[in-house]
Image: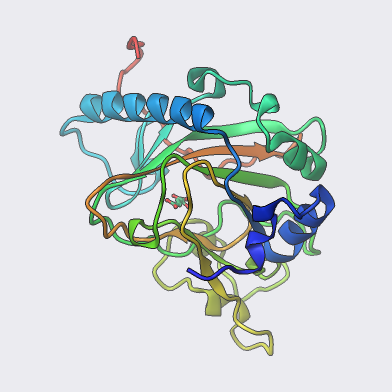
Length: 272
Ligand SMILES: O=C(O)CCC(=O)C(=O)O
């Protein structure tokens, strides 16, 4: 596919200041490729092993869509799209040593905290998600990001395999505190009526452009938590695996991401 403005760093031209500027204006940044093959292989091996063990433990137990209907160990984010939390320790890494830490800490502060990490795997044939944001704005005025996500492609992800799609610049438009026509629960929980047009309804502002990029293994998508995004459908014959690492500004404690109140293991800690 053709290159877009967000691919600026591919040839190493972008400085950190330019990357931050891009994140502030577009809400996302594609760094491609970013992780070396050994690191990708290590993240991929842990992700696949953990997913397999947790899916086996889930078996035929009932599970709905969304974190409140899931388990501590697995959430079905949308039909056939599985989120399995994995800590940096379980991944075998120190996240402050990861190559994105400089950028993340420049935005969120040196005392930024790891909030979540894991793998999101979409089964062949799984549909596109509804557009959503990952957390709400915290003030009426537009503040710097309070949380940043890093998605890592664990293998090549062509468009047919359903990479993440973003509405460029929508983090500036998704503020339910300054725009009373926005319904918070319809932004942060997937709702079929929420589309990029929703954010600019009855205004003169242009609809934010939908952007999806194929990714090579080891590419990282870094984005503001308030950006409207969705995982696209997987039309391929293989499962799509993307590892994620999420960070928050110190003191930001809101959590709409993992709301489950039950474990697959009911207090018995499995050896996985
Ligand atoms: O699977 C993806 O690409 C995105 C997943 C996502 O945004 C979510 O489940 O909240």
